[in-house]
Length: 355
Image 1 (spheres, one colour):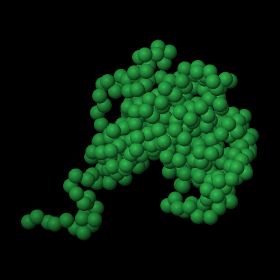
Image 2: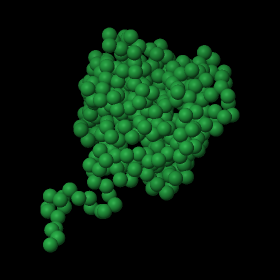
Image 3: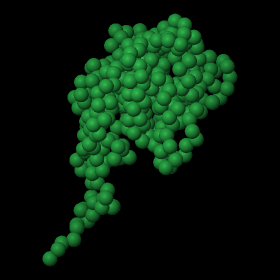
Image 4: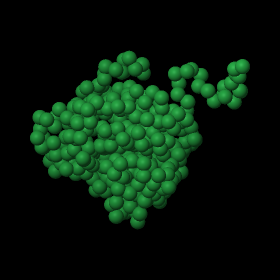
């Protein structure tokens, strides 16, 4: 006599037969030899990576279809991602609302190869004008916004936890209030606040030894000015090329980067003064109009991919690391977007023997 499933079994079972159990083992997918060879030709200075890891949507891209969603979000998912030939970095996004401890970061460091790098997003506690609850919903004004002591303590935990596998600590400044950005005085005040924070942070006891690369990303286009670039340059802080719907296109941001780094911004062969960090969140003003359906996104955004690849080549020629982090909202599938960028870089490398 066949026994039916118990209620506990039914509660644990997936709704459909083709959905893996959440605790199913995580494994990767076979990679074409041509991809492995292209990744092997990539400069060691280049680190392509994703915004976060362990997404169920990446089954079929880097994770096997049988991989469990719960285990993908843990060390198993990170290890498979880090073992994917063309992925050499990841941006730890969860820490924005739920900061990682030094111990957690140390465990992450042990789960990846020696040449893998982490970009760690600093907590909203110090980078957001507004308070956030555990679900990310904003509330009143944040009294610890731009707190140097809290920020320097976080940087130290990243350095101690990740060691040489720390690529950069990212301070992603959420949008300032619209009312403040409408007035020139409000925009100037915001820039000077960020500049004072940069100066205080780079001179903090736990940071001033220069053991960590610090990077600033702003979400208000009116803050991306020569004045802000001057503040970042004086503190040795890297401006992030943040690609999203609210910011200028990459070409304009590249001009701002030239102002920050170049002796002569008009020199077509200007060099980067420090690591390049590009975060491709979603399509910007120069990108084709996308909707959320994957069918529409599959057309891709070759213009932005080519611009990113050309900027990466400039970084390599400058002798500095280049980090390109992409999210699913860029083209629908971050690992595949980065694979396409790898193909562009490989083609450019073949045409330019300096790469």
